[in-house]
Length: 368
Figure 1 (cartoon, one colour):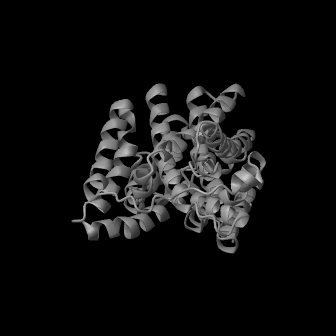
Figure 2: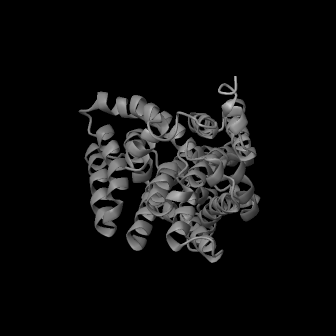
Figure 3: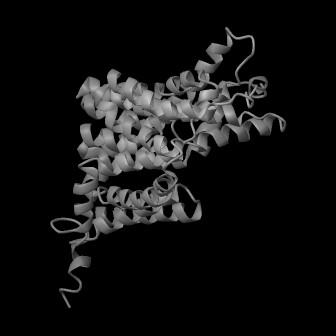
């Protein structure tokens, strides 16, 4: 009987709290539908790793094997980028290349959060950079950089990145309203629907981006190259089955394994610490800074433009694709039912996907 109750008797208060946190993540994934594909496996992984004497972790544990094979080697984030690349249509960005600047401006939060984290004295500059990347609203990039710079904090950083991605519909609108007027939110823009992007351009784009980004920051080639390879598979026109497999089977399988493996890093000892709350707080500010940076850049650009840009487009420059673009369109139509800015928002959102990876690559290049 004692053997059967050994696990219960070994349970600590911290482990119980972590199991409750895991249950909460599962609850919001199912009930609120907040990033269910990630938060549900992360929550279940947290439960598995915090059960006393769990056979799922440790020597021979399947979660430890997955961590060593997929996170430590950075294989899972790279495979996710191939899948994401196969899902992205860059034509809205190529119709309006100016949106690249909004994708760059919205990365301000990464560097602001990095400086904030470094100023606390709790983290090294490399760890601060990994925390700042939370603001990219790009889970795989956060995991990739954290695995390089902040292995001890990979659990909190990953959970913060994915949780705040799920909360983008709650985080972005208040920031946008605070920084814009009703008149600015009603600005209409020409979508350039008639501009055609040739097949040659769509094929050349991922190749050129990989080469240029690789020359600027060679350490980013793994990230950028995986994303652009996935996009090349999509656009080449001769690998339709592989493109569909990348978008569906590969994305679903790796997301499932990535989520539950990240959950296994949420041990009571590592997660229930003051630094975790600090990481979560700075991560939230990083999202706010990213949104504000994009909006303020758009307002600055408008000082010199005859045909004004709807400043809400700047907020879509974060990497939360396509969620942020949808939020901007919804806000625009709430102000004016006849205002359609989705194409511009998608262009900025896609640019943000590229911008976040390049920002991560630059930090890796400078601080490695």
